Length: 426
Image (cartoon, rainbow, N blue to C red; front, side, top):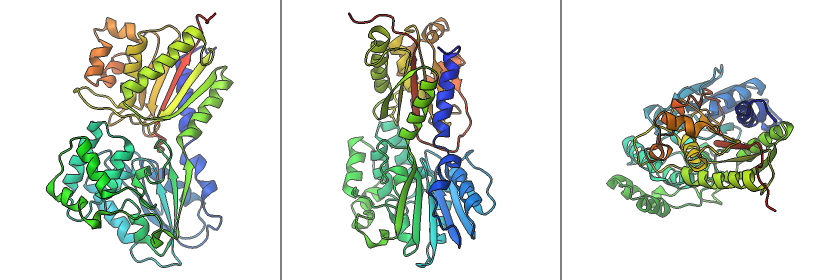
Protein backbone atom coordinates (compact mmCIF):
# COMPACT_ATOMS: atom_id res chain seq x y z
CA UNK A 1 0.00 0.00 0.00
CA UNK A 2 1.48 3.39 -0.96
CA UNK A 3 2.33 5.80 1.83
CA UNK A 4 0.92 8.57 -0.36
CA UNK A 5 -1.82 7.62 -2.86
CA UNK A 6 -1.68 11.10 -4.38
CA UNK A 7 2.01 10.66 -5.18
CA UNK A 8 1.30 7.33 -6.87
CA UNK A 9 -1.38 8.99 -9.00
CA UNK A 10 1.11 11.67 -10.06
CA UNK A 11 3.68 8.98 -10.90
CA UNK A 12 1.14 7.11 -13.04
CA UNK A 13 0.36 10.35 -14.91
CA UNK A 14 4.06 11.06 -15.46
CA UNK A 15 4.59 7.50 -16.71
CA UNK A 16 1.75 7.88 -19.22
CA UNK A 17 3.28 11.11 -20.53
CA UNK A 18 6.79 9.66 -20.79
CA UNK A 19 5.52 6.66 -22.76
CA UNK A 20 4.31 9.01 -25.50
CA UNK A 21 7.10 11.57 -25.53
CA UNK A 22 8.82 12.12 -28.91
CA UNK A 23 12.25 11.80 -27.28
CA UNK A 24 11.39 8.16 -26.52
CA UNK A 25 9.25 7.06 -29.47
CA UNK A 26 10.18 8.85 -32.72
CA UNK A 27 13.77 8.01 -33.65
CA UNK A 28 13.24 4.26 -34.11
CA UNK A 29 10.59 4.93 -36.76
CA UNK A 30 12.60 7.33 -38.94
CA UNK A 31 13.87 6.01 -42.31
CA UNK A 32 16.97 3.84 -42.05
CA UNK A 33 18.61 5.97 -44.76
CA UNK A 34 19.02 9.34 -43.07
CA UNK A 35 21.43 10.82 -45.59
CA UNK A 36 20.55 13.39 -48.21
CA UNK A 37 18.26 16.39 -48.06
CA UNK A 38 14.97 16.32 -46.18
CA UNK A 39 12.26 18.93 -45.70
CA UNK A 40 10.64 18.75 -42.28
CA UNK A 41 7.18 20.20 -41.70
CA UNK A 42 4.90 19.62 -38.75
CA UNK A 43 1.91 20.67 -36.69
CA UNK A 44 0.69 19.87 -33.20
CA UNK A 45 1.49 20.17 -29.54
CA UNK A 46 4.40 17.73 -29.93
CA UNK A 47 5.75 19.27 -33.16
CA UNK A 48 8.72 21.11 -31.64
CA UNK A 49 9.86 18.13 -29.55
CA UNK A 50 9.51 15.88 -32.61
CA UNK A 51 11.56 18.34 -34.70
CA UNK A 52 14.35 18.19 -32.12
CA UNK A 53 14.55 14.41 -32.55
CA UNK A 54 14.80 14.66 -36.34
CA UNK A 55 17.50 17.33 -36.11
CA UNK A 56 19.50 15.18 -33.71
CA UNK A 57 19.31 11.95 -35.72
CA UNK A 58 19.32 13.07 -39.37
CA UNK A 59 22.74 12.91 -41.02
CA UNK A 60 22.01 14.84 -44.22
CA UNK A 61 20.77 18.36 -44.92
CA UNK A 62 17.72 19.36 -42.89
CA UNK A 63 15.47 22.36 -43.25
CA UNK A 64 11.86 22.96 -42.38
CA UNK A 65 9.07 24.63 -40.48
CA UNK A 66 6.77 23.35 -37.73
CA UNK A 67 3.96 24.98 -35.78
CA UNK A 68 3.00 24.26 -32.18
CA UNK A 69 0.79 25.79 -29.52
CA UNK A 70 1.91 28.92 -27.67
CA UNK A 71 4.21 27.81 -24.86
CA UNK A 72 4.90 24.37 -26.39
CA UNK A 73 7.98 25.37 -28.41
CA UNK A 74 11.48 23.90 -28.07
CA UNK A 75 14.83 25.15 -29.40
CA UNK A 76 15.81 23.86 -32.85
CA UNK A 77 18.77 24.95 -34.99
CA UNK A 78 17.76 23.93 -38.51
CA UNK A 79 13.99 23.67 -38.32
CA UNK A 80 12.02 26.84 -37.64
CA UNK A 81 9.50 26.55 -34.81
CA UNK A 82 6.49 28.88 -34.87
CA UNK A 83 3.87 29.12 -32.12
CA UNK A 84 0.18 29.74 -32.78
CA UNK A 85 -3.21 29.56 -31.04
CA UNK A 86 -5.13 26.46 -29.96
CA UNK A 87 -7.97 25.41 -29.84
CA UNK A 88 -9.27 28.41 -31.81
CA UNK A 89 -6.94 29.25 -34.73
CA UNK A 90 -5.33 32.66 -35.17
CA UNK A 91 -3.47 34.64 -37.82
CA UNK A 92 -0.14 33.06 -36.84
CA UNK A 93 -1.49 29.59 -37.65
CA UNK A 94 -2.87 30.85 -40.95
CA UNK A 95 0.46 32.43 -41.90
CA UNK A 96 2.52 29.32 -41.11
CA UNK A 97 0.08 27.11 -43.05
CA UNK A 98 0.59 29.32 -46.11
CA UNK A 99 4.36 29.09 -45.68
CA UNK A 100 4.23 25.30 -45.34
CA UNK A 101 2.30 25.01 -48.61
CA UNK A 102 4.82 27.29 -50.33
CA UNK A 103 7.70 25.20 -48.99
CA UNK A 104 6.35 22.02 -50.60
CA UNK A 105 4.82 23.49 -53.76
CA UNK A 106 7.65 22.77 -56.24
CA UNK A 107 9.04 19.40 -55.15
CA UNK A 108 10.22 16.55 -57.40
CA UNK A 109 10.31 12.77 -57.14
CA UNK A 110 13.80 13.04 -55.66
CA UNK A 111 12.59 15.12 -52.68
CA UNK A 112 11.74 13.70 -49.27
CA UNK A 113 9.35 15.28 -46.81
CA UNK A 114 8.97 14.35 -43.16
CA UNK A 115 5.66 15.48 -41.69
CA UNK A 116 5.49 15.51 -37.89
CA UNK A 117 1.90 15.31 -36.72
CA UNK A 118 0.28 15.41 -33.29
CA UNK A 119 -2.88 16.49 -31.54
CA UNK A 120 -3.77 20.15 -31.93
CA UNK A 121 -2.65 20.24 -35.53
CA UNK A 122 -6.16 20.98 -36.79
CA UNK A 123 -6.28 24.39 -35.15
CA UNK A 124 -2.56 25.16 -35.46
CA UNK A 125 -2.26 24.54 -39.20
CA UNK A 126 -5.21 26.70 -40.20
CA UNK A 127 -5.60 27.73 -43.83
CA UNK A 128 -9.22 28.42 -44.78
CA UNK A 129 -10.53 27.21 -48.11
CA UNK A 130 -11.34 29.62 -50.92
CA UNK A 131 -14.04 32.09 -49.91
CA UNK A 132 -13.90 31.09 -46.21
CA UNK A 133 -12.40 33.65 -43.84
CA UNK A 134 -10.35 33.06 -40.72
CA UNK A 135 -13.14 34.75 -38.76
CA UNK A 136 -15.61 32.19 -40.16
CA UNK A 137 -13.36 29.31 -39.05
CA UNK A 138 -12.82 30.86 -35.61
CA UNK A 139 -16.56 31.31 -35.03
CA UNK A 140 -17.36 27.76 -36.15
CA UNK A 141 -14.53 26.32 -34.02
CA UNK A 142 -15.80 28.11 -30.92
CA UNK A 143 -19.36 26.95 -31.57
CA UNK A 144 -18.27 23.33 -32.14
CA UNK A 145 -16.13 23.33 -28.98
CA UNK A 146 -19.16 24.39 -26.90
CA UNK A 147 -21.64 22.13 -28.67
CA UNK A 148 -20.59 18.73 -27.32
CA UNK A 149 -19.60 17.52 -30.82
CA UNK A 150 -17.09 14.66 -30.89
CA UNK A 151 -13.53 15.21 -32.12
CA UNK A 152 -14.37 13.21 -35.26
CA UNK A 153 -17.33 15.47 -36.01
CA UNK A 154 -15.32 18.62 -35.40
CA UNK A 155 -12.52 17.43 -37.65
CA UNK A 156 -14.95 16.49 -40.42
CA UNK A 157 -16.05 20.12 -40.52
CA UNK A 158 -12.49 21.44 -40.22
CA UNK A 159 -11.27 19.27 -43.11
CA UNK A 160 -13.90 20.51 -45.52
CA UNK A 161 -13.25 24.15 -44.68
CA UNK A 162 -9.47 23.81 -45.12
CA UNK A 163 -7.01 24.28 -47.96
CA UNK A 164 -4.47 21.98 -46.27
CA UNK A 165 -6.29 19.19 -44.37
CA UNK A 166 -8.12 16.09 -45.57
CA UNK A 167 -5.18 14.90 -47.70
CA UNK A 168 -4.59 18.26 -49.38
CA UNK A 169 -1.10 18.67 -47.91
CA UNK A 170 0.00 15.35 -49.45
CA UNK A 171 -1.47 16.50 -52.75
CA UNK A 172 0.59 19.69 -52.52
CA UNK A 173 3.77 17.65 -51.88
CA UNK A 174 3.26 15.37 -54.91
CA UNK A 175 5.39 13.86 -56.45
CA UNK A 176 7.79 13.95 -53.48
CA UNK A 177 7.89 11.05 -51.00
CA UNK A 178 6.12 11.98 -47.76
CA UNK A 179 6.69 10.20 -44.44
CA UNK A 180 4.12 11.18 -41.82
CA UNK A 181 4.94 10.30 -38.19
CA UNK A 182 1.95 10.76 -35.92
CA UNK A 183 1.19 10.76 -32.21
CA UNK A 184 -2.48 9.88 -31.79
CA UNK A 185 -4.71 11.88 -29.50
CA UNK A 186 -8.01 10.44 -30.74
CA UNK A 187 -10.08 7.40 -29.75
CA UNK A 188 -9.50 4.64 -32.28
CA UNK A 189 -6.23 6.20 -33.54
CA UNK A 190 -7.77 6.93 -36.95
CA UNK A 191 -5.28 8.58 -39.31
CA UNK A 192 -8.14 10.49 -40.91
CA UNK A 193 -9.01 12.12 -37.57
CA UNK A 194 -5.58 12.91 -36.07
CA UNK A 195 -5.17 16.66 -36.73
CA UNK A 196 -7.74 16.26 -39.53
CA UNK A 197 -5.50 14.03 -41.65
CA UNK A 198 -3.50 16.44 -43.86
CA UNK A 199 -1.61 13.63 -45.63
CA UNK A 200 -4.14 10.78 -45.77
CA UNK A 201 -7.29 10.07 -47.77
CA UNK A 202 -10.56 11.28 -46.30
CA UNK A 203 -13.76 9.27 -46.88
CA UNK A 204 -16.06 11.87 -45.27
CA UNK A 205 -18.03 14.32 -47.39
CA UNK A 206 -18.92 17.99 -47.49
CA UNK A 207 -22.57 17.02 -47.08
CA UNK A 208 -21.69 15.28 -43.80
CA UNK A 209 -19.84 18.38 -42.61
CA UNK A 210 -22.89 20.52 -43.31
CA UNK A 211 -25.14 17.99 -41.56
CA UNK A 212 -22.94 18.13 -38.43
CA UNK A 213 -23.27 21.91 -38.26
CA UNK A 214 -27.04 21.57 -38.64
CA UNK A 215 -27.22 18.78 -36.02
CA UNK A 216 -25.72 21.06 -33.38
CA UNK A 217 -27.76 24.07 -34.52
CA UNK A 218 -24.65 26.06 -35.42
CA UNK A 219 -25.22 29.12 -37.56
CA UNK A 220 -23.52 28.67 -40.93
CA UNK A 221 -22.30 31.85 -42.69
CA UNK A 222 -23.52 32.12 -46.32
CA UNK A 223 -19.97 31.87 -47.73
CA UNK A 224 -19.34 28.67 -45.72
CA UNK A 225 -22.61 27.13 -46.84
CA UNK A 226 -21.86 27.99 -50.47
CA UNK A 227 -18.40 26.42 -50.19
CA UNK A 228 -19.67 23.20 -48.58
CA UNK A 229 -22.28 22.87 -51.32
CA UNK A 230 -19.58 23.19 -53.99
CA UNK A 231 -17.81 20.10 -55.44
CA UNK A 232 -14.51 21.92 -54.90
CA UNK A 233 -14.91 21.52 -51.14
CA UNK A 234 -14.43 17.75 -51.30
CA UNK A 235 -11.29 16.37 -49.69
CA UNK A 236 -8.79 13.93 -51.25
CA UNK A 237 -10.51 10.54 -51.46
CA UNK A 238 -9.12 6.98 -51.11
CA UNK A 239 -7.37 5.78 -54.26
CA UNK A 240 -6.26 9.24 -55.38
CA UNK A 241 -2.91 8.86 -57.25
CA UNK A 242 -1.43 11.84 -55.38
CA UNK A 243 -1.31 9.70 -52.24
CA UNK A 244 0.76 6.90 -53.82
CA UNK A 245 4.03 8.22 -52.36
CA UNK A 246 2.59 9.26 -48.99
CA UNK A 247 3.32 6.95 -46.04
CA UNK A 248 1.73 7.17 -42.59
CA UNK A 249 3.26 5.76 -39.40
CA UNK A 250 1.68 5.90 -35.93
CA UNK A 251 4.49 6.23 -33.35
CA UNK A 252 2.52 6.68 -30.11
CA UNK A 253 -1.06 6.11 -29.10
CA UNK A 254 -3.14 6.40 -25.94
CA UNK A 255 -3.21 2.64 -25.33
CA UNK A 256 0.59 2.56 -24.98
CA UNK A 257 0.41 5.18 -22.23
CA UNK A 258 -2.36 3.31 -20.41
CA UNK A 259 -0.34 0.09 -20.60
CA UNK A 260 2.78 1.83 -19.26
CA UNK A 261 0.75 3.19 -16.35
CA UNK A 262 -0.66 -0.29 -15.73
CA UNK A 263 2.88 -1.71 -15.42
CA UNK A 264 3.75 1.06 -12.95
CA UNK A 265 0.60 0.31 -10.94
CA UNK A 266 1.42 -3.41 -10.73
CA UNK A 267 4.88 -2.57 -9.45
CA UNK A 268 3.20 -0.57 -6.66
CA UNK A 269 0.96 -3.51 -5.75
CA UNK A 270 -2.23 -2.40 -7.52
CA UNK A 271 -4.15 -4.55 -10.00
CA UNK A 272 -4.92 -2.43 -13.09
CA UNK A 273 -8.17 -2.38 -15.06
CA UNK A 274 -7.83 -0.58 -18.40
CA UNK A 275 -11.14 0.68 -19.75
CA UNK A 276 -9.49 2.10 -22.90
CA UNK A 277 -10.24 5.19 -24.97
CA UNK A 278 -13.60 6.68 -24.09
CA UNK A 279 -15.83 9.37 -25.53
CA UNK A 280 -18.99 11.06 -24.28
CA UNK A 281 -19.95 13.91 -21.97
CA UNK A 282 -17.32 14.28 -19.24
CA UNK A 283 -19.87 14.34 -16.44
CA UNK A 284 -21.62 11.21 -17.73
CA UNK A 285 -18.37 9.29 -18.27
CA UNK A 286 -17.50 10.18 -14.65
CA UNK A 287 -20.76 8.67 -13.39
CA UNK A 288 -19.90 5.37 -15.07
CA UNK A 289 -16.41 5.43 -13.52
CA UNK A 290 -17.97 6.17 -10.12
CA UNK A 291 -20.28 3.17 -10.48
CA UNK A 292 -17.37 0.85 -11.28
CA UNK A 293 -15.30 2.25 -8.40
CA UNK A 294 -18.16 1.72 -5.94
CA UNK A 295 -18.67 -1.84 -7.19
CA UNK A 296 -14.99 -2.58 -6.55
CA UNK A 297 -14.96 -0.90 -3.15
CA UNK A 298 -18.16 -2.57 -1.90
CA UNK A 299 -18.15 -5.95 -3.62
CA UNK A 300 -14.71 -6.65 -5.08
CA UNK A 301 -16.02 -6.77 -8.67
CA UNK A 302 -14.93 -6.68 -11.47
CA UNK A 303 -11.62 -6.94 -9.57
CA UNK A 304 -10.55 -6.75 -5.96
CA UNK A 305 -8.81 -3.82 -4.31
CA UNK A 306 -6.14 -2.60 -4.09
CA UNK A 307 -6.56 -1.71 -7.73
CA UNK A 308 -6.55 1.16 -10.20
CA UNK A 309 -9.05 1.91 -12.96
CA UNK A 310 -7.34 3.50 -15.99
CA UNK A 311 -8.92 5.18 -19.00
CA UNK A 312 -8.09 7.66 -21.72
CA UNK A 313 -9.74 9.12 -24.79
CA UNK A 314 -11.35 12.48 -25.33
CA UNK A 315 -14.55 13.39 -23.56
CA UNK A 316 -16.61 16.47 -24.39
CA UNK A 317 -18.20 19.27 -22.40
CA UNK A 318 -21.42 20.94 -23.43
CA UNK A 319 -20.89 24.37 -21.88
CA UNK A 320 -23.90 25.58 -19.92
CA UNK A 321 -22.35 27.76 -17.20
CA UNK A 322 -19.78 30.50 -16.86
CA UNK A 323 -17.19 28.72 -14.72
CA UNK A 324 -13.60 27.78 -15.53
CA UNK A 325 -12.45 24.29 -16.33
CA UNK A 326 -11.54 21.83 -19.05
CA UNK A 327 -13.00 18.40 -19.61
CA UNK A 328 -10.72 16.70 -17.05
CA UNK A 329 -11.70 19.08 -14.26
CA UNK A 330 -15.33 18.55 -15.29
CA UNK A 331 -14.88 14.76 -15.15
CA UNK A 332 -13.28 14.92 -11.71
CA UNK A 333 -15.93 17.28 -10.34
CA UNK A 334 -18.69 14.95 -11.53
CA UNK A 335 -16.82 11.99 -10.01
CA UNK A 336 -16.55 13.86 -6.70
CA UNK A 337 -20.24 14.69 -6.78
CA UNK A 338 -21.10 11.04 -7.50
CA UNK A 339 -18.82 9.45 -4.88
CA UNK A 340 -19.43 12.09 -2.19
CA UNK A 341 -16.32 11.20 -0.24
CA UNK A 342 -16.48 7.41 -0.46
CA UNK A 343 -13.61 6.18 1.74
CA UNK A 344 -10.44 4.81 0.20
CA UNK A 345 -11.01 6.17 -3.33
CA UNK A 346 -8.56 8.63 -4.91
CA UNK A 347 -8.57 9.87 -8.51
CA UNK A 348 -6.61 11.93 -11.01
CA UNK A 349 -7.76 13.28 -14.36
CA UNK A 350 -5.41 15.22 -16.61
CA UNK A 351 -4.56 16.07 -20.19
CA UNK A 352 -1.24 14.58 -21.29
CA UNK A 353 -0.33 17.79 -23.14
CA UNK A 354 -0.23 19.60 -19.78
CA UNK A 355 -3.15 21.92 -20.53
CA UNK A 356 -6.74 21.05 -19.59
CA UNK A 357 -8.79 22.93 -22.16
CA UNK A 358 -7.53 26.50 -22.15
CA UNK A 359 -6.51 26.74 -18.50
CA UNK A 360 -3.02 26.64 -16.94
CA UNK A 361 -3.42 23.24 -15.28
CA UNK A 362 -3.13 19.74 -16.68
CA UNK A 363 -5.91 18.46 -14.44
CA UNK A 364 -6.63 17.80 -10.78
CA UNK A 365 -6.69 15.20 -8.00
CA UNK A 366 -9.66 14.02 -5.92
CA UNK A 367 -9.16 12.53 -2.45
CA UNK A 368 -11.72 10.93 -0.12
CA UNK A 369 -12.00 14.22 1.81
CA UNK A 370 -12.36 16.51 -1.25
CA UNK A 371 -16.16 16.56 -1.06
CA UNK A 372 -16.25 17.38 2.67
CA UNK A 373 -13.49 20.01 2.45
CA UNK A 374 -15.23 21.75 -0.43
CA UNK A 375 -18.56 21.68 1.42
CA UNK A 376 -16.86 23.28 4.42
CA UNK A 377 -15.71 26.06 2.09
CA UNK A 378 -19.28 26.62 0.92
CA UNK A 379 -18.80 24.87 -2.42
CA UNK A 380 -21.62 22.62 -3.58
CA UNK A 381 -20.28 20.08 -6.09
CA UNK A 382 -23.56 19.82 -7.97
CA UNK A 383 -23.94 23.60 -8.29
CA UNK A 384 -20.32 23.98 -9.41
CA UNK A 385 -20.89 21.27 -12.01
CA UNK A 386 -23.95 23.13 -13.30
CA UNK A 387 -21.65 26.13 -13.77
CA UNK A 388 -18.86 24.09 -15.46
CA UNK A 389 -16.53 25.29 -12.70
CA UNK A 390 -14.24 22.30 -12.14
CA UNK A 391 -11.15 24.51 -12.19
CA UNK A 392 -12.52 26.80 -9.50
CA UNK A 393 -13.63 23.87 -7.33
CA UNK A 394 -10.24 22.14 -7.28
CA UNK A 395 -8.30 25.40 -7.13
CA UNK A 396 -10.12 26.16 -3.87
CA UNK A 397 -8.93 22.76 -2.57
CA UNK A 398 -5.37 23.39 -3.80
CA UNK A 399 -5.74 20.17 -5.81
CA UNK A 400 -4.90 21.33 -9.33
CA UNK A 401 -2.06 19.58 -11.19
CA UNK A 402 0.25 22.00 -12.98
CA UNK A 403 2.90 20.40 -15.19
CA UNK A 404 3.56 23.13 -17.79
CA UNK A 405 3.37 22.00 -21.46
CA UNK A 406 4.67 18.43 -21.85
CA UNK A 407 5.29 18.67 -25.64
CA UNK A 408 3.38 15.51 -26.38
CA UNK A 409 -0.31 14.66 -26.53
CA UNK A 410 -2.16 11.36 -26.29
CA UNK A 411 -5.14 13.17 -24.81
CA UNK A 412 -6.83 12.50 -21.49
CA UNK A 413 -5.53 10.25 -18.75
CA UNK A 414 -7.66 9.11 -15.83
CA UNK A 415 -6.69 6.93 -12.87
CA UNK A 416 -8.90 5.93 -9.96
CA UNK A 417 -7.20 4.21 -6.99
CA UNK A 418 -9.34 1.98 -4.78
CA UNK A 419 -7.36 1.07 -1.66
CA UNK A 420 -9.55 -1.67 -0.21
CA UNK A 421 -12.75 -3.65 -0.64
CA UNK A 422 -14.83 -3.14 2.47
CA UNK A 423 -17.46 -5.82 1.85
CA UNK A 424 -17.67 -8.87 -0.41
CA UNK A 425 -20.70 -10.55 -1.88
CA UNK A 426 -21.56 -13.75 -0.09
